[in-house]
Every structure is written in C-alpha cells, then in structure tokens.
Image 1 (tube, rainbow, N blue to C red):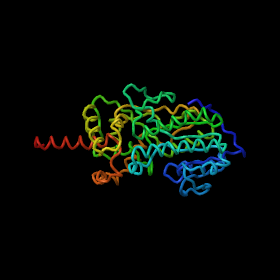
Image 2 (cartoon, rainbow, N blue to C red):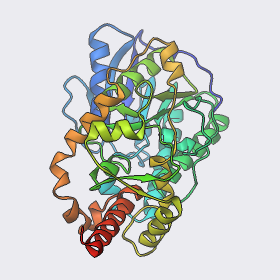
Image 3 (cartoon, rainbow, N blue to C red):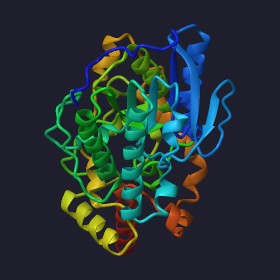
Image 4 (cartoon, one colour):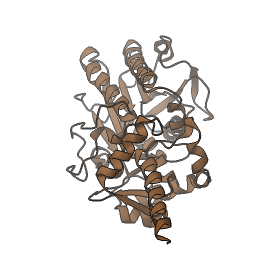
Amino acid sequence: MSSPSVRVRARRGTLSVAVTGAASPVGDRIVRALLERSAAGGAIGTVVGLGTERGGAEGAHWRLVDLDSPDLASALRGVDALVHVAASTNLAADLRLTSRTRRERATREIQTVVISAAAAGVARLVVVSSAMAYGASPGNPVPLPEDAPLAADADEGLVGDLLMVEQVLRAAEQVHPGLAITVVRPATLVGPGIDTVMTRHFEAPRLLTVKGGCPAWQFCHVEDLATALVTTVELGLGPVVTVASQGWLTQTQVEQVSGMHQVELSESMALSIGQRLHRVGILPFPPSDLAYTVYPWAVSSATLAAAGWRPAYDNVACLRALVDGLRGHRAMAARRLDRKDAALGAASAAVALVGTAAIMRRRRRKGV
C-alpha cells in the first residue's frame, strides 16, 4: 500500500462518512461510534448506513443498496469517506456457500465498492481486513510491524479471500489515484455477534496445543475497532493501520483466563488429522488455519498509538468477553457438529475434538 496519510477535506466543514453492512454487529458498532463522535463535536458530521436492511442506530441516514449493485455509486453521493468491512464475522453464513461462490462474492463486492467510491468522488476508502493476512509463523517478530509483508497462504479459505481483497486494493491505487485507500488489520475480533474461525477455536472441548508451538494470543474488541476507525477517518491515517489490545497472552495465560484445558499433539499429527477432515468435508476450511493458534501474528497498533488512540479493552478482558459470549454454545458443541452450516470453523477446534477423543480412547484401554 502506498496511499499517502492525509486528512480528507470535508466539503461542508465536517466529514460525511458511510459504512457498508451497517446493520451487522460490526457495522452497527462502527456507525454508533461515528455518531457518538459527531455528537461530541468532532470532525464527523453525517453518518450514512449502507446495506440491504436498516440498522438500529438512531441518527444515521440509511440508504438501502446491495454492495455489488451499480446503484452503490448513487448511494455514495455526497460522501467524503467510506468504511467497508471486508473481513467476515458471520461464519455460519459463510459455511452455507462454496469456497468458489464466497470468493466470487467477495471479489465482486470489493470491485464494486472501489469503482463506486471513485465514481461518486469519495475521497477516502477505509477497508477492514485482518492481521491474519500477515500469516502466522514461528519466525514472526512479536509484534509484527505494520509494513510487514503479507505472508499468509493464498488458499481457498477466508484468509485467502482477504488477500484477494487487498490485491484488488493495490491495483485500485494505480487506477484511481484520487481515492486514498487505508487498510485496517485488526487482531482476533471479539464482541457480541462476532463469529469467526478464531472465535470458534474456543468452542472446542479443549484448546489445542502443538509441541514446539509459540502462540502470542492477541485480541481486538469490536468497540475498540470502531473507535480506531473513527480516529483513522478523522486523521486520515494510513496506508496500513493495525489495531489490537496492547501486548499479548501466552498459551498458559489463555488457559488460566478461559478455564479451558489443553490437548497437545505433534504438529505433524495435527496437520494430518486436519487434512483428512478437510478432504472428507468435516472441516470446512483448510488446515493451514491451524497455524494461527500455534504461531504468533500479534501486531503493534503503532500508527494508532502515535495518533493518541488507546484501546479500552486489554487482552484479558477481551478473552473473558469471548468466553462469556460462548457459554451458551459449550453444551451444544456436539450438536453444532451435526449441522453443516455451523460446523466448527477453526482447524484447531476440529483437531482438538479428534485429539481429545483419541486421548479418551487410550485412557479407556488403560482402564484409567
């Protein structure tokens, strides 16, 4: 990304900001944060909610439109800055689609968003991706700098979708030089209504650990993402902004805070089980997702910190919020596996299930 870090000049003294998917849990929180900033007399003025349905935030101007429709350009008239959440937070809905259909939809949406924003004269486009795009590796520095290369696997999974989205954005910088583009990459998102491959990891009966693994667990509460986006829009931050709670947690700390027990497997065994489950369709996403629960991909939030932004939630508070929000699903975990649209999304969760079953079988044989 090479877009300059410049403030967007508002046409009316304050910025008119639009948010795609504004009725979704993440979009709703972003809209409300923008409205709160507007009411406080900041640089934010009109807040426009875009999507196929109205949200519940009072004070927003709602424009109903499909994100892959040519009508999006008309819906963006008078908008100075557009916030688009490309990262999926509705895993159950994603699992109803084939990987090809999901990828095509994501491609079509980001292309339409870029073209429509440029055609409508929008000055800045802020796209929410994920820090998962950096990839998880034992060689990653902790934390990763914002300009680190995107080293994630470009496979058929959701991370591959985001790599494709960012590829479209890089091309857009050359085609639409008048459109300043900022990519925001949060750590593992948590909060009400957030359902991802990473949150599903904590629905497993046990937390998977891999011998030799060195995870650095880091989270981002959706409320902190929302305030970070407000800061990004107001100050024209970019071209890349990472956002997360300060620091990170070790595997031991995660187990202590969550109250969950672990199951340890070798990396070769975990990957082998994951590959077999993926081949037969039990595991919906590639086993490469396992790396995100085993190796570090923590980020620094350096640009936001330099701008004075601070998260309201630390990693412990985020993890507690995540676990509390999943309590209703714990007892239902086995039944969720029986439903195709709610199979556990993280490779580690499925592997942990199988690994736990293997341990129990060994114990029964030994009469333990």
